[in-house]
Length: 254
Image (cartoon, rainbow, N blue to C red):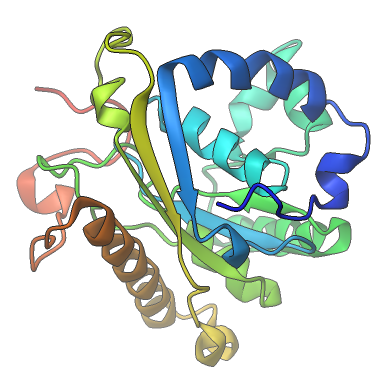
């Protein structure tokens, strides 16, 4: 990533993100040596949906630092219940995080429309893990995706940006308790890809087949980026937890 990249107004004007960055970035920099490529593919202005792979509980810190270094504020989707927690809820609302409710399909569709319109209105980006949880794939390849990211993108034609990162597993393995701090500054690679084109599906955004197609395109793009980082090919068939008797939310029981 070029260190000369222009900062967006999101990270040049005063905000709660500045003290947060001062608290988070130094310790992360002591643990991980993050290298970002493709930074120019993340819009410096306006709304975007950033969709990374997810295999470690340390991932969000890596992604947040990478996005901040690129010049955008790292906002995530978070469970709606977290917004009701004292202090934490205030912080999530103050930083513009987006609540996700597990509701009926009709209510979910209305919520998606409102959230998408707010992203466009405020020119904000949001980070959405399309897998919904840590991958169940035993080799840490992206598994079957969910439709949340593409629903947001389709609602208002927001750029849908794939991202892959690799190296975090050396810091904190999937469901590992605690961090591996030695040796320090483990290399972590982050690669941002070209926007995924789903424009042909916008008129069919409410159809399950269109959502499935858009999600497959996104997961294919993320997987291709990860193949480049790992310098190896992913399995021909993407891991489907249901086919292996696994639940798709929460921790994976061994």
